[in-house]
Picture 1 (tube, helix red, strand yellow):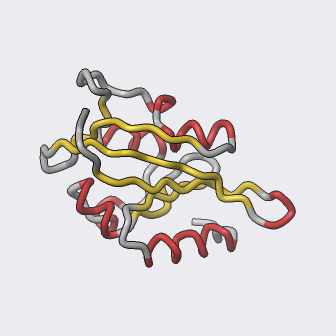
Picture 2: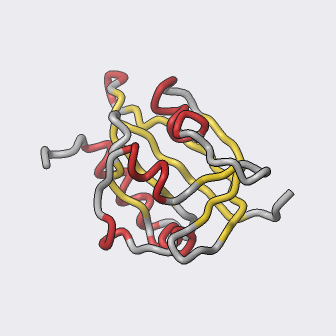
Length: 131
């Protein structure tokens, strides 16, 4: 794996220090990291999954809308941020690897470094009361 930009290294360290679930991807949408609070929601430890391509992680954690319909990757806030390079947010259900369903709210932001260098995106999310 090629060396990561400093901004992504720092974003991972920042995410690892938070008590809020965090998900970090590079510019191609490849999963680089999710922290321990995210592991609790996903029902799977990061060291069990490691990095994944966007097509994998956008479906393995089974995001669904309020009617139970699968959300396509382009409907996820993090993917919107990857394509637009602007923050995005949304709420939806996620069916984790243990068969549990959580309603989560997600806010994603681009990771942009010096000289306006785009390095990827980070999503922070939390469980909320379902609608």
